[in-house]
Picture 1 (spheres, rainbow, N blue to C red):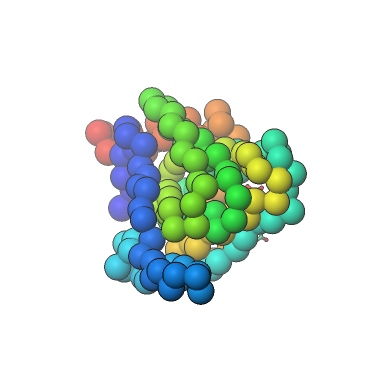
Picture 2 (cartoon, rainbow, N blue to C red; picture 1 turned 45 degrees about the vertical axis):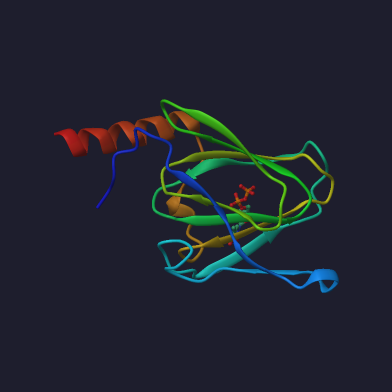
Amino acid sequence: MKSKTNNLNYKIIKLRSIDNGSNGMLSFFENNIDYNFEIKRFYYIYGASAGSERGFHAHKKLKQLLFCPHGKIEVTLMNENEKTIIILDEPNKGLIIEPCTWREIKWIQQNAVLCVAVSDFYDESDYIRDFEEYLEYLGGLSNENTG
Ligand code: TYD
């Protein structure tokens, strides 16, 4: 079922972590416990220079868990009504992005690493890469839900 997207649909979570003192920290997450989907794919982005930007798209159905195990990354989330900026700068800070949310991602720190665990295999047809098209897509969903 498609959902109406009047509010930005995201959640910031603190990933469960074990503190082993000078031996470091261990953070982890598990399907259907820390987020309400099953991970089918994991990807990560590294080697981006400070100030560089990626994203500029929304997904129709894909659910995602983002975290930054090293460095600092700024994630801007948007829909037709709202915009928010989330800073990922701690290895145990997770950001769950629900479908139909426009995202723009900026590298604040050189060589920051962005890890993304997602609910499905890669499928280009799940992407909306044009903001005008994204707004039209949301409009279509609203009509479906109200009509
Ligand atoms: P994209 O998701 O557009 O990344 P970003 O928004 O960070 O720039 O992906 C960039 C390219 O990599 C695009 O051509 C699709 C390809 N890609 C895959 O082949 N498999 C994947 O799992 C992902 C995430 C991307």
